[in-house]
Image (cartoon, rainbow, N blue to C red; front, side, top):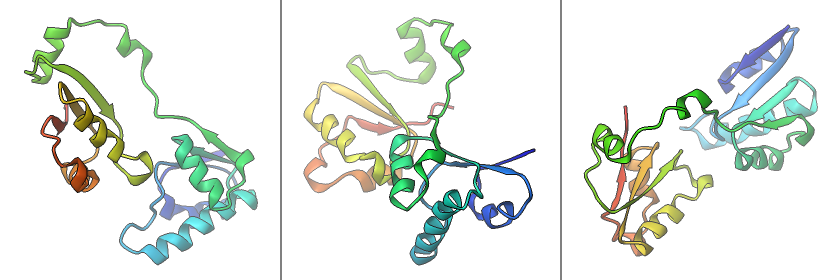
Length: 169
């Protein structure tokens, strides 16, 4: 009865299937290597909501929803659902020092954790600026790549030795 997809390049096929389509968008880039193709694809995807080809369009953030609306998507068909958290995972408490040891965190300073992507629409330069403005705090970035973190840094925020990109897996 429903077809649920997350991979945008499958959309041209999926919109022609005789079923209700649910599309979950995780980012704004369909074709990352080709800007002109990505621009065309984004416009085409947004128009599918107006043609009712996409029954429900799920965006994983309000910023992403705003992007698609700006591209022409029917706002009434967009459902914003942030990435979920399993509530039962939060029921087990662990002592702070044990958690730090398990994650390999050796600092005794205050810790700030940002979990998410470092794409431009998430404004990662704000994290960089905060890390610089609060030097007594260690900032961990969970998600993104070290290269994205480097790209997010601008010359005026270059003194951020307490900012680290870390994978906890």
